[in-house]
Image 1 (cartoon, one colour):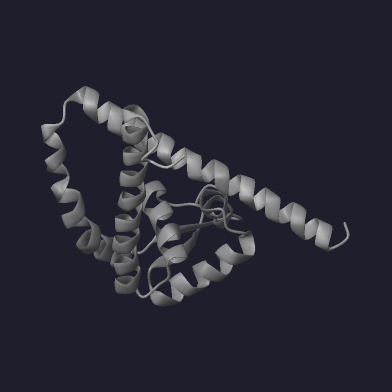
Image 2 (cartoon, rainbow, N blue to C red):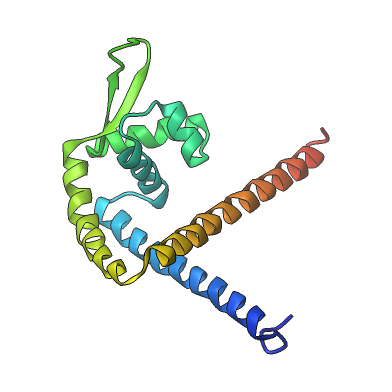
Length: 167
């Protein structure tokens, strides 16, 4: 159905979805600029974002949170470690486990890049609590949907590849 054929409510839904897409495109551009500043790719930025939010994690935990394979995470962490953005250290409670954390250099660079962005969040002071809850719900659901469909597409690819391999 084209938006010209839609009723007023459907037009609002399409308009909200388009605004979300444009928001994602704008955020992608911001993240591209940040990745360029750090001298890494977007996948590495996703890894550092996970570490920034969670603190210390194992490579396996990073893999689960990013959707990367364990081999890809190991190679990525090697590159990030060589660049000085992350460090590996032994878990003090279980010396067999290796944890990964952002370096102080990475934390300082992240503060330079993201600090001014976070500082302007005061613009949301104009919204009521109810509006902020609605915005939060919309964004959270808008984040769940692409992940659900990414899993669906990944499953489609696995089935296609298995058919192609004669499995």
